[in-house]
Image (cartoon, rainbow, N blue to C red; front, side, top):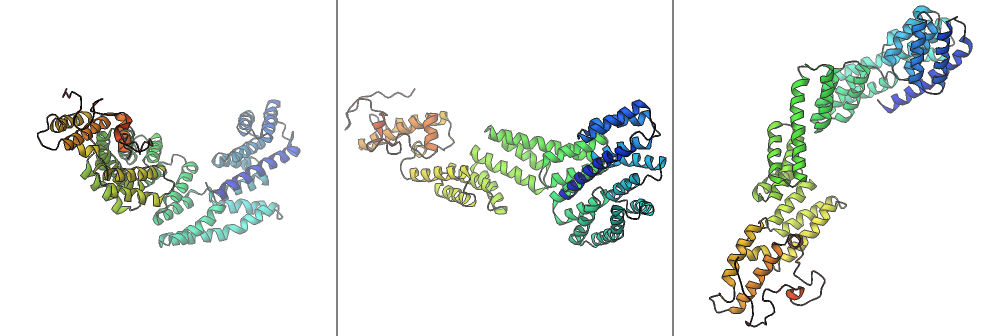
Length: 497
């Protein structure tokens, strides 16, 4: 419901309540109703004045049941229905009032107002004409009857523009008409079609949502809402609305197959998101691929699935596949920050640190407040600087995704080769240095905390990076040669188990 419509209803509510309360002053006790009915009417009046509309309504129901031929009981109940925004319920009561007392102009004027807001212009005009025949000075009836003819012309013109596909011209006229006839379902349906033709799905949803409240059992509107939300990439809202359709008609031929599809897709999206959050990357990849099978045509879901694949392939170490899918996204959306950061992480896995710096920097340029992008840039810059020094992964000849078992296997192989006591070459100092580096690599990469530090661009064995001043890295306490001296006079035993 639009802001204008809401304000109109609020004003209508206040005027109705004030009218019925003032009307009671001179109508009280004139109808000779039974005492019990009068008691319900009096309680209804008090509750209405206090703004307790639902409680007032229950008393007016009792009054109507107790005296079904009293026009005032129907009129007062209609008043509360209107105050609650239930014009469809108020209209039969107003009809009954006029049937019982045709000369009651207040009821006829009120019915004319309801009919006008519902867009029943000819019937509203007839009621206002009767009011004016009895009270020519009635300003409200005069004002309303004067606007009906130009309003009818505007609506016809809006429909003509719609059929001519001049959608904005139709929207402009329909918007003016809806201000006067906010409960007219047809006007909102036509305007929603215009909005959809313009690609403005959010405004279309607003109009269609209103029609679900204005028309009973409106399954076509719920189906249309579900399809619109689906095309907007909002599968969860699509599912909610298609369920409303099936509540009204469990066997609806169009709603049921769409429900099965969107329910399946929502489940796959949620599972992929959960797997991503839980760092279960292989399962995430599998669910994303299932999403592409379930919905291979709607671009927003394809991009969502590819986003999962870009992230999870990157973290799973599927380097080539990650580059391919991330590049696909960035070719379509060059400023997609998530894809930029995922590709940057893939560059890091591939030890292309300068490219990682470029991607993170681009992401920061797009959104300077993105904490993840800024932290990623800092890490990539550190890794780039670190790569120009000592790289523990390269020392052992393993990938950055290597597990502990692979690390230990590489370490044993390298240590056996470069152990100074077993080294066959002449350059013992080179063997000693290599062995120190191999032992350092094993120390860092088999310790989860130190490895995480290293993966974030900080060498936990580098005293400069740890802000412990200069000197040899082994000042931190790590020394594979134990307490022995240098220069080849080391004192240690090396075992491979």
